[in-house]
Length: 230
Image (cartoon, rainbow, N blue to C red; front, side, top):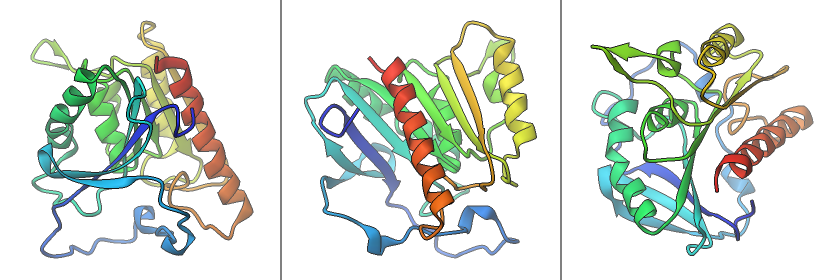
């Protein structure tokens, strides 16, 4: 599923925090992207999307398939843009893509993993992949609130990390156990060895093992989209 076969939208937010709140060290901030490694720009930035979004868009627009990528929280005002409201804000984007006849997959990283899980509870998209997610709970896999079901209902792949302190393997295995009890939803779960939270997008580019792990995670995500994104 190369860029010529699918339309890819990398969502970011135009809102920025007025002040930075300092917390204890988190793996979320390790290994920021090395912007010097950028290659030739293949797409373009689109501003003014619903919900305060902007997107880097690449690929063939006439493709019947679209992949929406959601990264981490940085750039969002955390109090006013929770994962739930962010998924709601993105509904017009999904609606526009569907109006154009596209089937939609969502890939999420860190905070974006929770965003992806929220979209998978709707009819807006077809398939999701969660890469080293944060803030995701077993209730997202199967939850009932006031006798109504609020749970993932789309094929879901979860890629975790052995040394993740944000969403440790024990929690990822709880997700897997919950999904296994449902039977009706396709799922796949993998824990990548010797890597930490952020391994799929925030990794040490000088570490061959880290680089290879990120490549493998991307391959798993693409394979999952190939399988379920028609």
